[in-house]
Image 1 (cartoon, one colour):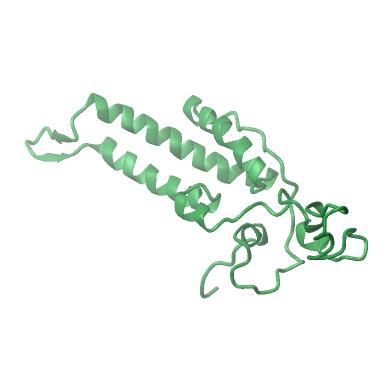
Image 2: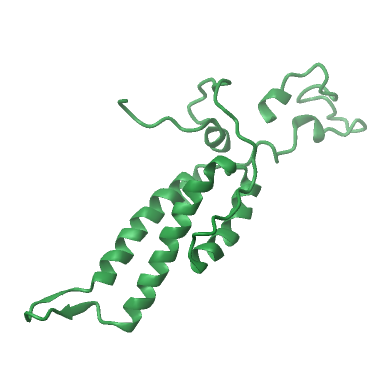
Length: 173
């Protein structure tokens, strides 16, 4: 496949569909749910899971299908935290038995786990740059008719007071 990887429709909606292209209706839509935390994760990784899984659920960007991706992120986080802890205990440069000075292997582990974490953070919209492209969760946004007060002099100005005749509901669900 050539070119950029296509973005999921949910992410396009969160970003406000900047390209204004029609959104696909054939894309699978898994149920927004918090997957169960895998038992094989380290204690630090499990703590990170508990910290972020609920937040991702509120944003509507996680489902049962995302369990492995979230587990991979959390495990990378756990390994990164362990490597950083070891780096505090040892020097960033070490002397080998043959007398050469080299970078501490824990620094290499920490840097590699940060790379892995960054990939998953971007996928889930958990970096400032990826979040800056997100406007609001469409399902959490008030629908246009919810703003209308039937007694207001501006009632109905932006659309019908009831949504039975209105097809905007398809864009918010």
